[in-house]
Structure formats: C-alpha cells, structure tokens
Image (tube, rainbow, N blue to C red; front, side, top):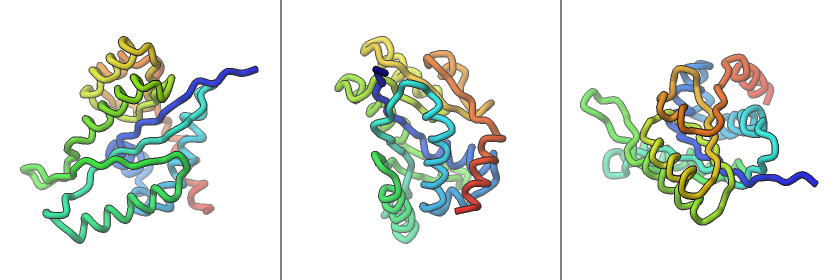
Length: 195
C-alpha cells in the first residue's frame, strides 16, 4: 500500500503569469484568457507538481492582485470576471486576491498578496490541512513563513521556480526545489495551441 502525503499548492499568480507565461514563453494571450490560463495550469501541474512522487494534491490556492473598484471599476470588473471564470475551470482550486496598485512609475504592483500566501501557508499547516506545501513564488518575503511551517509544524515545503527569478534565501530554506525548464513550457504551449 502506497502512502500519500497531502499536498497544497500555493501560487503567486503575478509571478507565474509575468515571469513564466509572458517572459519565458512570450504568450501574453495565455495569461489574459481564463480558459487558456486554466489549461496552462492543468498542463503545468501535470509536468511539475505531479512530478513529486507520493504527494496527492488536495488544494490549489492561487493568489493575485486586483485593481480596487474605487480606482478603476471597469478594469476591476474585467479582472474579477477573469478570476471567477478561472475558479470554474479547475477542480480543488480557489483564488485569493490582494490589491494591484500603481507605483510612482505607473507600473502595477501587487500589495498584500505575499502576506495572504504566507498567512494561509502557516495557518493551514497548523490546522494540519497538508503535509507538503508546494510554493510557486520568488520573494524572500516568504522565508519567515517557510521557516515557521518547517520548524514549528514539521511540514515540508517544496518550491517550483523560474531559474534566476528567485531569491537565494528562499531557495536555501525550502526542502526541495524544482526549476522550471523553458523546453517544458514550450511543450505545454504547443499542447495549448491544439486545444
């Protein structure tokens, strides 16, 4: 009898969409269409988190930023529709939203998203919702949360990351890390083109 460890996936959506989809494979259409993006997530999952043997994925939590409705109601509603459609396309999937705010140069930046991921990762570890957290993110801001999960609960934290797009401190503290390979992404996008 094979024993499976329960896994939760924690995805920083801004990281995944901007680094992986837009930069690595130059397919912004995938990041902007909920059907294409959900297909990308399914194929990405088959290639990456399902490659960890003995882990049964029980939940996929996707975190991203949304423009506040008081800043741009039309864009807010457009983004909300995207996230709601994404929710309907994937099983065991939920979306948690922080804010998307323009910085002094006018670039959109996520606010509160890293905190949402960190809090959920720690609380769900203490509530014994998972045995293994698989984090798809880059920031060193996650180091305290990863440390808390590992040292205080004995849970495992793995990381899937884009090469050269991850903080060294985060890479050092996770138990297992798996770099995203550009050829894998090319293969995934070729499959998406067939859908």
